[in-house]
Each structure stands twice: as structure tokens, then as C-alpha cells.
Amino acid sequence: MAGWSGTDRRVVVTGASSGIGAAAAIEAARAGATVALVARRADRLGEVLAQCRTHSPASQMVVADLDDLEGIDAVAARLADALGGVDVLINNAGVPKRRSVVDLTPADVEGVMRINYFSPVRLTLALLPGMLERGDGDIVNVSSMGVHLAAYRVSAYSATKAALEMFTEGLRLELGGTGVRARLFIPGSTDSEFSTPKPGNDEPFPRDPRTVSSAEEVGAALIASLADDRYITYATERDAASSAARNADPEAWLENLRRVFSGG
Image (cartoon, rainbow, N blue to C red; front, side):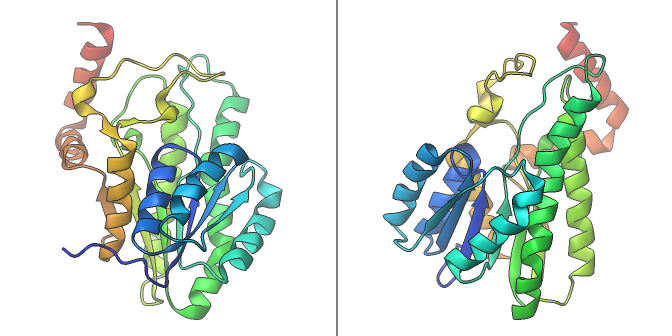
């Protein structure tokens, strides 16, 4: 399959100051796209922008806190103005929530739902009319293997991504024939800041390094997924195989997880 060409494509990547978002933004710029980066940390965003501009000098950055839902329409307007329109929206920004269900509070759940679900939904709805008017566009929502493979202490986080997946499926259904393509990208375990210790979260579980992909590998897979009209793309074949194994016998998969996490 030929690689994706970003020539004449205007791409927005949220959560672009590090990890998968930064890697995807740089890869899109390398493919010839003009990229607009969105994140809270101006210093880190500027570093990523500098790398993007070595490939795509017209790339831009918009410093914004996507946790502020009431400000998202203004962010969308700034992005459209900076690029002259948006052809590809990559909703990558997200936050973890590692906490046992017995310790979760309503505030925990509402907070992670706000940034991981309501934020990308609102940004999508703000930018969708322009895509529909042009009859062309791609909306890529970054989900998680946490939706497909249960794990301890991530129930709240996984639920946000499950909601995003069903929103994306509705988009895919309703936008058929409009020229606007809704897509899911599903990464598994990735070496990024996302999986490091964070305030308000339990300590992350140790990971088998053989199952961890680099952010650069995952970002490249994300951009490569734009080359055709696939609805769902897993970051690696390993992730796709794991999802298939779980779906073949969900209860056996859960029992195996119980043994693993209990040390049995």
C-alpha cells in the first residue's frame, strides 16, 4: 500500500506536545501536510512545532486547554483561521485515570470524561460543518486497547474511550456518502508520558517491554492509516490479535487477567 500523501492537506493534532500526538504531527508534516498542533504546554508544543517546520514551514501551533469545554468553539475558530480550513482532525488529547472502582469518586469519572470524551466531541462538532461544506475530510479519534481488553484500575478511563468509539461509529454511519470519513485508531501499550506516574492516579502496573511500542511507531501507524478508507486501525498486529482473542472467549480472557493480576 502506498503511503499517505499530506500534500495540500491541513491537519490538526490535539495532545501534540508529547507522545503519540507529537509523533503523529511530525509524521504528518514529513508527509507534506500543514499541521496545527494543540496542547496546553507552550514550551513543549514549540519544540514539536520546530520539528514539524523542518518538513512543513507553514505549520502552526495553538496553545489551549481542551479541558475548558466552553472554550472549544473558539479553539476551533483559531485552528480554521490558522490553516485556512481543516481537512484532517486527529483527536488524540487525553488523560489517564488509574484508580480502583472501589476508590473512584464521581468527580474522578466526570473529570476524565470531560477531556477524553466531551472535548473531542465538541471539537469534532465545531469543525465538521466546514468539512461537510467542502465535501471532504477525515476525523480520526484515538481510542485505546483498554476498551477491548479489560485491566485493573482503568475502568473510568476505558469507559471514556468506549463512549468515543460509539460516537465515532455513529459518525461513520451518518456521514457515509458525504466525503467525510470517521475513523478509529486503537493503540496498545505505548512508551510515552501517558503511562508514567501522575498525581491523582494509582501507580501504573509494570509492563512487559516486549509488548510496548514506541510513540514514533504508533504515530507513524496513525498517519499511515489515512492512506485508505479503513474504519478501524489497530496500531500493531499484536493489538489486533489480542482483541480477537478476547472477543473469542471474553470470560476466559477475564479469568486469565484475574490470575495474572492476583499473582496466581
